[in-house]
Length: 108
Image 1 (cartoon, one colour):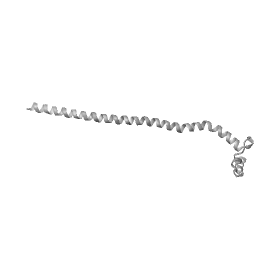
Image 2 (cartoon, one colour):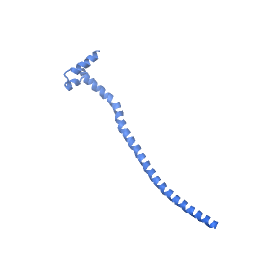
Image 3 (cartoon, one colour):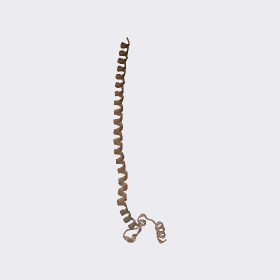
Image 4 (tube, one colour):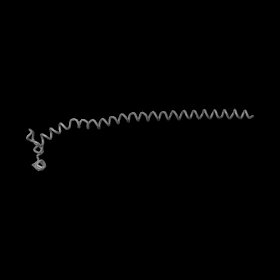
């Protein structure tokens, strides 16, 4: 009688272990799908971050490279009409107020 009970218990244990393994496999598959979705999200997030970085840093780098030359020419021609260009104050129609202030600053 004891053998029958022990074999019955072993069969019940096997059935419960098999059921637990089946449930564990289902949960593992769901976790695997979730991890794949997260990994895809991280991949696209890195790509978008790189694009944003390029969109922000490229204009800044180009400005640092090309802007000083253009600003130098612009300021030279605009603030010093004797260099060959019209003064920016003449182009803007300034009656001389701002021009006088700048001349006073240059004298000091």
